[in-house]
Length: 151
Image (cartoon, rainbow, N blue to C red; front, side, top):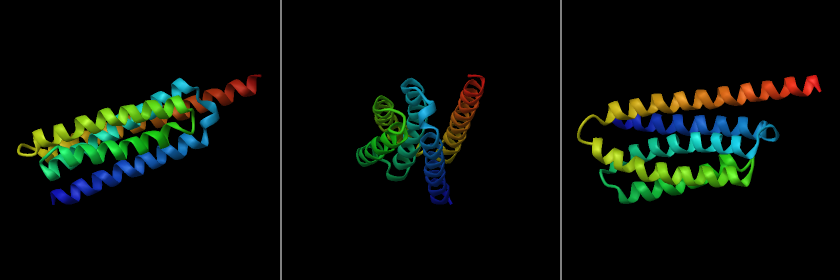
């Protein structure tokens, strides 16, 4: 049962990051480098923290989960930030490193207590963050469209 929860949580992260990447890439000309940094960092930190926590819970050690979550995070941070600006990609990569370092520590700490509760909590926080970022993208795109129509 727990393995199914962990796998579905990882799939949730990948699906949400993919959706966010598509939105960012579709509207990349609308965002300033600072806005791209916020988008990339928001997705980056929560995604790598959640993945790192799951890996820390499963393996009950920090070395390999930390390396895997940091490497995966660097790639995803680059992908979510690069469509906007290289500064946004760099910020996303750095945030993923931070989340990748913290996630396995959290996973190892909660592995013997209530790991499913922690993963469920992080899933909820992650979904909340993704909804907020998607809302930000849609509001910003709508605002830019109104500005363009007025000019």
